[in-house]
Image 1 (tube, rainbow, N blue to C red):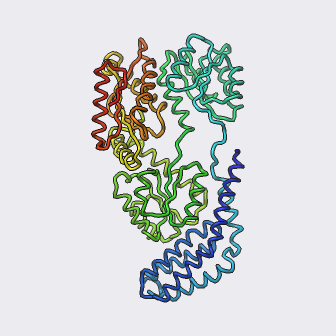
Image 2: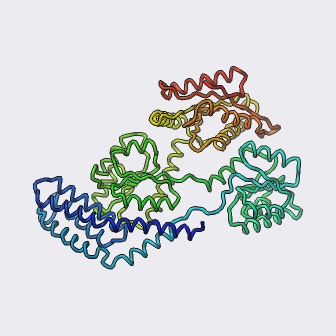
Image 3: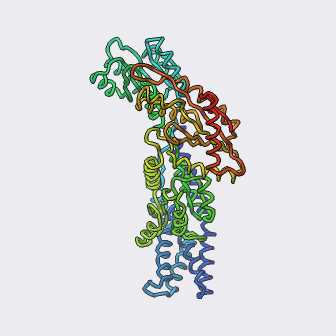
Length: 557
């Protein structure tokens, strides 16, 4: 499906939501009329005024979003006047009659023509937003394919094997003409050039640039050479190369670079939780964000928010301020009471344009206040930037600087959370503790920089071979922890054993020689009486048995 087809599909989806809202508008107006009648019939009941305020707020926020701009604007003005009346700050004090007259006028007008000539301009705005909405990538999946271009049969076989240990699919290619044909048939994730160019590296780089320009799918290009001159490197940079390595080759550093280049195009979708009692409004905003590539969950009943947050773990909460069951500001304060959710961005989306109210909302723990109706591109941009910024900050706080894995405290926090989820859902969960064998000897023999290289190699291998749902952390030094949700210990052991076998074959580069390393592991499965500390203790005991039994093996508790 091309970008235009996706934009057409989005437009059809939005039109369907708008049509559903328009069909439901008469009953919404009837509900507003009933709330108004209750206020007139029972003027001494404060709850009726608050109920009417909520109805006005819902209409103010949703009408403009779904193409009824003037209706939304008038409802918003009446909402402000009713709020002032309730507080006694209106020009007429607590006199409700002017507000009631304004609502009656709105109801009469809306029953005749709620569009009132505004729909054409609003539709145009919405279409512009759709056209500007980023569409999902329609190109074929390149997976983890590497084309290894070479002119030396012996070295290329060894290099291909090393890539395969790290989980890449490798196809060896004998020259640039063959490479151009292979890319037309199947674009790769990366091209690694280990080639002595007859006309020099500058000519070779120019050929690669032409091949790359002729391919619609983006891929990384990395050069390997015996030369390390400035001129050679400059030629490859001008040709659009992503990396340059001189021999002897640091294989772990090369894989590390390719991983980062591939991951650049595989970033996980942001998880967005939309909290709004207005079903049509929530679904409309959810559709926009999903089309922009985000993972979105909607919540219409605010009392379920803590349960949903525990299960879904959102990276951003998009929430209305005024809801019947509970004020959004109070909900924000409830969320901020839990230290686990202190860093989750909360963005209010409301029709309230009063600056004091917006500042009060921000003071409650929110990060941003957006006003309805909001153009699609503005909403997508605001949410995307907040999620990206939050990920960067969390990475600094919760990630180990050497490996990029979760640090000690973060992985323990995840373990507590995953244990609670496993018990609630009555699903299995396994925990593995891994330790690099004889690591002190590696540091003493080859130096700490080489030891860091070994740690990075294992962290990369774990990230490549395990599922995205698995949680990997560097527990300390050369020790790692893996949390495997929905997995029994019997299923976890063979997976980890395959990783162990691959790691033992990876060659690490030292100054005077290459060497291999290994790791041992212990696996424990959740039991009815297991808390986080108990599960860690059992996995550690199994790890000790693996070490004591000769190392380079995985033992189940």
